[in-house]
Length: 217
Image 1 (spheres, rainbow, N blue to C red):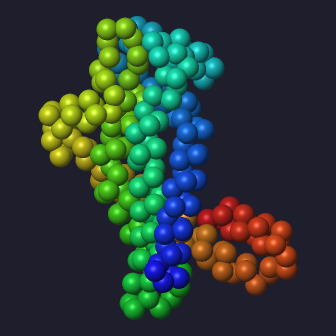
Image 2: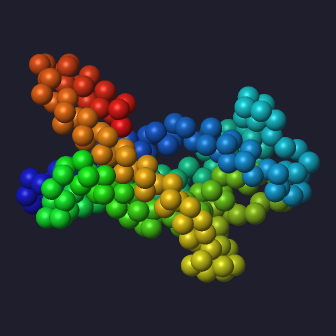
């Protein structure tokens, strides 16, 4: 394995690992957000007992059938989604940037295009998992009213109801959101890191400048 290919895999693994940690730590807030966004469409007991605000909403969700663990409902499939999302995104970015060198000489333009392509590829690979995660996390857990009994059940019911079209519902909107986001993020970070690298004088300074590059992106 060459050094460039090894760097691609290191970037992919590092991005995936960081994404898993971040998503797991913020999973309760993510679930609370999804329930609040969708509760106007709720039926049954969820419609008669809507969440009310941040703190009370957390208490309401933790008081349901699964207890505190219910706050992480959908996090397992989210981790499965994040691993390929960040991995594919970082891997494709390096590959696309290398491939575009033949066509785009201007570095910032090349990074922008590579970032957009990497984001699009990640969405196309992982969107079905995002659908399952959203549906699991946005449903409430009342006795006798479970809509989905886990990720596999949600995947099966979605496929039975609408097939491939159901698993890629909203994919166009996701592409419109993610492509410019990843394009700007990668181009901003890599461009800022390159421009600031000449200022490095110590390991501490190097870390500070990389953090600054991340904030810039």
